[in-house]
Length: 71
Image 1: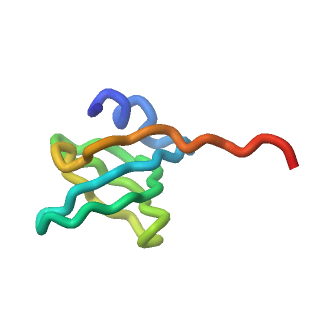
Image 2 (image 1 turned 90 degrees about the horizontal axis):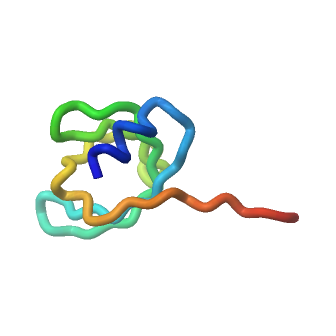
């Protein structure tokens, strides 16, 4: 999964992510990866409306947000 984050870092691609926090809370977030720093992903979180740091081993799944087609 680290390869995915590294490949799209710094771009405009949004990802939908399922994340397990340190206290066991599961959340679903939309993010845009800023950069990968070792075992962390620095990303803009559209849920919290700020740049956040996510630990790679706590990311349960991540997949591209599909763009809506049509009007």
